[in-house]
Image (tube, rainbow, N blue to C red; front, top):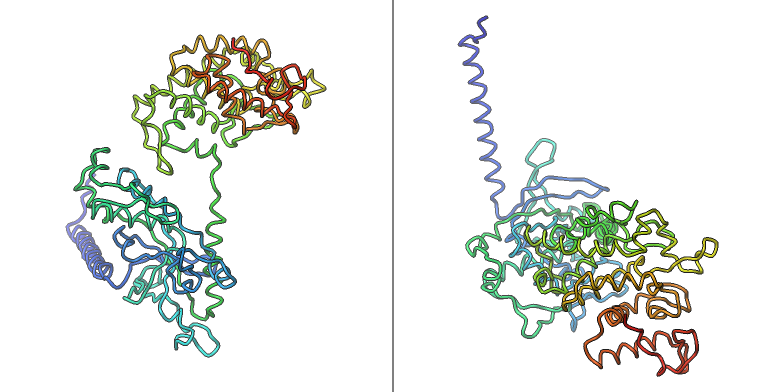
Length: 533
């Protein structure tokens, strides 16, 4: 069957295709001439909650030049403290804009993030576009009733429906970051660092820290960066959403309330992640990655039903989980950092972690798995794996009167697991094998030495608040030293003296008296260190 089209039909199709091509070229030329204007910004219009907004893609260099911090708004000038430079909360400013203070210590951290990370990403900035007349109540842009004759944003549509167009960015226009001020200071700092080769490090109040400076040469050398590629950072583009400071028909007071409400709603609706959710999603922190892999891959944690709480950071006395993902991450960090091999995984201050390589992660998982292999062999954990209720081993005696009494086990509380990881990590780093360490822990477990609410055990008063009959996390560091002492000993007489005094203070009942390990009341000087095995 002949399916060939007649030549006239072919000619028509080609003509249509050519017409479309020329049409697209014309549109592209028109858009290019509009988009490339310095005094205007190409945007798409959005409407939500009665307020129009204008969404655009802009370069980081454009943000550096165009976007200002909210505390420089003329609207707030009178409420800026001249000495501190911070927004002073008074009866005027509190009714204008509820803006959080900038933490300037994040400036250098965010600058490093942009420079060091190939996969850096910032969410869009929400900005307010204002004009000089907005802050001049006597301007003829306000009518006799004090309402704006025009919006502070002049929009020129480029399509029939008014969905695409240009907003005027004349020399008098001013943009202020309503949400994303830390992104703005990070961008400006990164570009300054690239252009000048150095950046002062500041504290949260913007004071320059002595002897702290970021050097571009050092960052390039430490991270193997391409300097030529860094020079292109300013050309990268990100999103910005712009709202008008004043809408047509609004009074100045109404405009202030709308802008303030917008800021408040944006921040309230941004629900923070739980610590567990952060640990689940973190693809940079090596300790979080290791903890996550062990949580879903270790034979013991996968054999026991719902062994890991992946969302919350705490566990109630009657709950089923053995641990939390946040606790597993904390344990991985302290256990692995006890060994110098993992020092490079740590971060300073508010810096973001850098993802370790595949081989390093595999080694971290293996080492952390080894720890949990030994934990799983402890008598209490073997009993749980065999089907005994987790809650019975966790609850204190007074919480389980009708079920044979709770065991109050140290290692079934997040703080106890943290103590274990830190103490065992230090002992292991000092040369003691895990087999040796856990042989002693097994003996402790069988003898009931790991019971928190027993007065004869050193945790009583340290991790167990005997007055409130509840866990007390403030004694964690004392508990770490106690466990180290009981298993392997502390290195100096001074260390032992300090620990003895800390335990005596924790067991104090007032007037220089304490309860000793036999529940007798004795002078604090009579409290001894717990016995070593």
